[in-house]
Image (cartoon, rainbow, N blue to C red; front, side, top):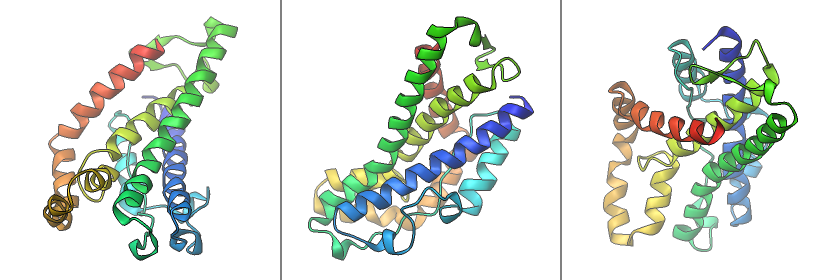
Length: 216
């Protein structure tokens, strides 16, 4: 990853995370909980969503290492007392973030295919990536696809506080959900361990290869 690609990736990560969290807040508002709205979290202003570790430190480390960046932002606050059906509504709120990232990736993919059709010379692969020196526009679109897909799949990992845990909680029985909830205090440490051991990196590497197979 070149310096230019690293800078582009950083901005795309910030955009993707902002859309992700704003979508959680919007879904919560639609489900009857105005907490995120009242706290100014339904906004595309990234400053409102930045988490020092998940939004800044982790993506920066991954970019320096030449790996596809991903991360997380400050969780959008949700008051279950405002939800008509907390289990169902929380599932919808949880899935809204990843769904927004997939939607952005689909739009970017369509744009990429249109650009490639208009002028195939705009796009060519260099060791699994895109040459930013040849076409910054294509690089932006390419990383918009990749980062949003990776962010969506990363957040669907069923470990609290990631969105995947909220999806699981909404699908399993109430008794099982209560037992599952017991791992929440340890979720962050489990997540860091899986990142440090490379387990999550391998999973997301597979996702990246699948995405590239559709692009190239």
